[in-house]
Length: 93
Image (tube, rainbow, N blue to C red):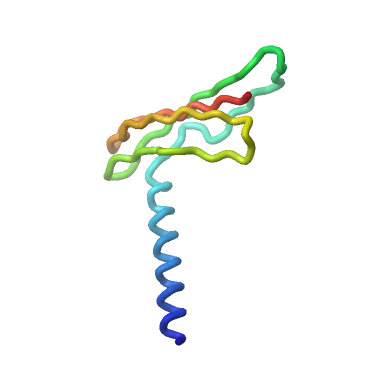
């Protein structure tokens, strides 16, 4: 029984380490952007975050999740080749 628990734990840890490796392969030029004071009457505001693929394989960002429904996003469906740059646009509504 102990072997099954240890194997399950090792598989769990290995899966999370693999997921972290992918994230380490991209580097954003900036991680935070301050929109400042936003007036609702002025409508939506957007900012584009640029990242570089520092890995050895192509990277694709399929989706982005936020904590609220006030964030829209635009991601490129095209893979970013190693050494290449990609963009993610965030819109605050």
